[in-house]
Image 1 (cartoon, helix red, strand yellow):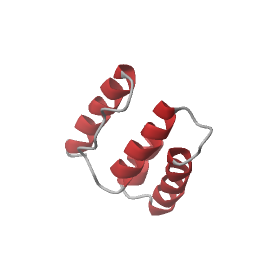
Image 2 (tube, rainbow, N blue to C red):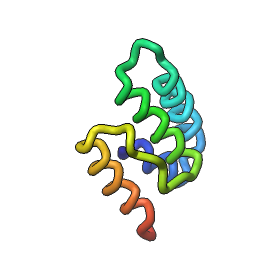
Image 3 (cartoon, one colour):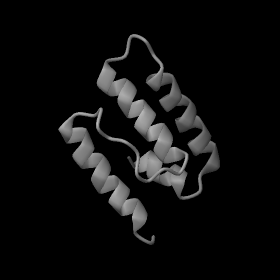
Image 4 (cartoon, rainbow, N blue to C red):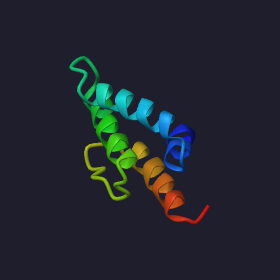
Length: 76
């Protein structure tokens, strides 16, 4: 999550690179469903959605992402 946070805090080249990678993961037919769902969620976060639908993720991923999203809401 560190790279995602760095990208969201202003590293535009990193944001672009991560977005492309997460989109690839989200649409990769051989990736497990939970990994594709994670790619979708992380892409949405990079686009500025701080309340993405986490319902397709395993509980442990949801917990981590909820904590991450809470950190993003805090002033840095």
